[in-house]
Every structure is written in C-alpha cells, then in structure tokens.
Image 1: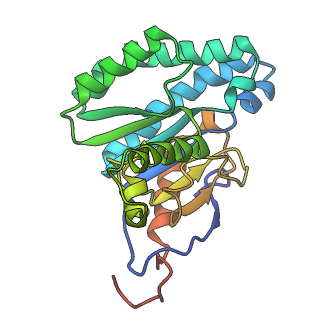
Image 2: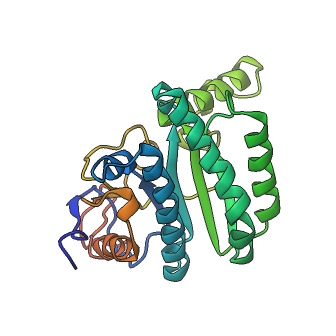
Length: 255
C-alpha cells in the first residue's frame, strides 16, 4: 500500500460479522477541480479526467464482485456553480452515456440514475431513459449515478409521497415506519450502503445518501478523484474487509 492509497478511516457502528466484500459501495468523487488547478489546467480537464476514473472504478467493482456501485456525480447544490461548468458536466454525462453505454451493457451492468429530474434538459432525460431501458435486465453490477441528487431533497420527496397517501386515506399515519419511507426513496430497489468512499482528503458526506449510509463504513482517501485507480479502490475494499461491523450490537455476538 503506497502513501497515496493508505486510507484514513472513521469507524461506523455497524455489524457483528466480518464481511469480506461490501454489497453496495458509494463513492463521493471529489477533487477534479483541485487536480486541474494543481497542474495549471482548466477545471473542465479535471472533470474529463474524472470520467476516466469512473471507468476504472466500474472495472474494479466488476472484477471484485461488488453488487451495486453508486457514484455521486452532480449534486442538487452544484447548480450554484458557474453556468459554463454546469453545462460542461451535463455534456460529460451525455458523452459518457453515448460512448460507454454499449460497453457497460456488454459487461452486464445495469444503469440506474437517481435524483430529481426537475431542471434536467430533455435530451438528458431521454438518454437516461434509454440507458435504464437497455440495461434493465442486466445483473452483474448495478451502476447507480446520483445526478441532480441531494439526500435531503430525496427524503423530502419521499415524505411528500407518503403524505399524499395519508391525505388520500390509503395509508394510516400510525402504520408509517422506516420500511414505508424507505420504499419511497430513490434507492428503494437497492440495498443500504455498506461502504462510503470519499476522495480528495475531505471528511464529510456532503448530503450523499444520508439515510442509506446510516450504518455504512466510511473510508476517506487523500487521492484526488482523477488519480483514483485500482490500487486506491482495492485499498478501500481491503480496509472494509478488516472492519468489524456491529449495527449497534456487540462485537462477537454474531448476526
């Protein structure tokens, strides 16, 4: 393990059995702008190189047998960035789907996009629909792209849907529990996160899958996202495998 791949970690309070491999990994892809700035390049070049890191991450997930990989690509707060940068990020999503979709489909990857569809251009909505339709039957890896996503927004949208059923008289408020609300989240079809990785040396979740990460293990890496490679991902997976997850229980009590 090199200096660039040794993760600084924060233990969650999760589960009593040793899990060799996480079912669901979420990655907060951070550091594109700093990577570019440190090289005297435009931020757009950092984002472009970040797409290459996405391809490497998918490759590792496939090789290691991760069932679900969620990538935080554009947050609901990113609209505050310069218009040119937002448009460039949209362009990268268009390019990624057009260039990589056929290869992802060939490899058995199911593509899903979570987040609000409001404000997204119609052509992007069409590309998302096509990607999800084409890959719907694939089962080797589910690649979830969190685009125009914010966890608080997701929870608010879910609560509204639950409230509508209460107002319509089809749901008793006393029956509302965690399972009811989780079923209305964008991630209802996926398992909760086992592992969250954040690059760039920052130590926060930044409104990423807060409900789903309640008992996730957290691994923070000092590498900037464009430099995230197989060694970085494997180091995080190995760190996860060394953890003892208890989900609020006692170590050694079994699950």
